[in-house]
Length: 274
Ligand SMILES: NC(=O)c1ccc[n+]([C@@H]2O[C@H](COP(=O)([O-])OP(=O)(O)OC[C@H]3O[C@@H](n4cnc5c(N)ncnc54)[C@H](O)[C@@H]3O)[C@@H](O)[C@H]2O)c1
Image (cartoon, rainbow, N blue to C red; front, side):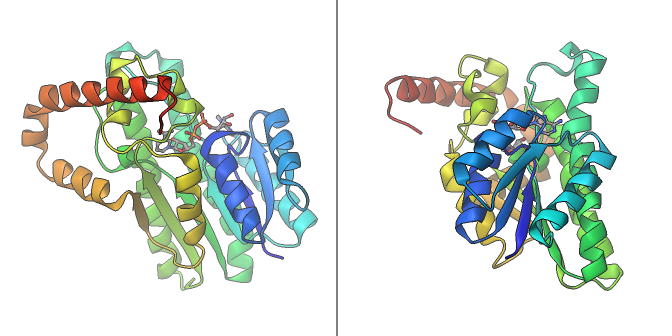
């Protein structure tokens, strides 16, 4: 039975991805900095899924988690770097600890997880690392600029690692970066009234249950970058290609995003969505 490790799997998208991978017959090692939530989530999925504590900021702990997966399940075929944190606001409003925390979890955490996974994967010459990035890794959302910076780092590392693997002759080790639009998870559940978080609500507000199967489908067809939905990826890349224009339309974009955010709030409070 193939095995997968998912980081930040105690709730939100990571939990749904774990369920989707388990449904495809993988033994899933659910990890989270919140040990109890990882263990409870693994218990809910049932054996052979299992849970443990993992703080992705710690490279040695990531290596130990990879080894623990192999010891318990026999192999490490898939590693999903999903753990992430979000803060919003004007860039000069964050304190240095907050800036460090975001880079340590979103960027370094992805790097730590990737390298921990690649060690055993390189030894057997196959495997798949899936990095949950964001559309904020392709464009710079106003109000979420710090988060966007960490996600740009993550996607650059993801694509660069894939290139390095091919350069080194590893054809059966894949790295996929997933860039979803806003997802209705605990990450943004308290941000319906936060004007700085409006970009998260500016397009399609996705359900984690809808995103997770698309992540699992990458096992059949790995992709360097998967944007969800695809049209939003095209939209964000187009905006990114014209930075002067994008800067000029920021007030218009934010006003529209705020309108959509209020609409989502009304719908969610009325129990209609997403
Ligand atoms: N929710 C969105 O709108 C959205 C959109 C695009 C991408 N994403 C990305 O999807 C991923 C999952 O986000 P989510 O929406 O499910 O968020 P979430 O806040 O619901 O879940 C994140 C999980 O990561 C865990 N975590 C936090 N710090 C950690 C650490 N140092 N080590 C290990 N685990 C840690 C948390 O305990 C939590 O269980 C993140 O990378 C996020 O950036 C989210």
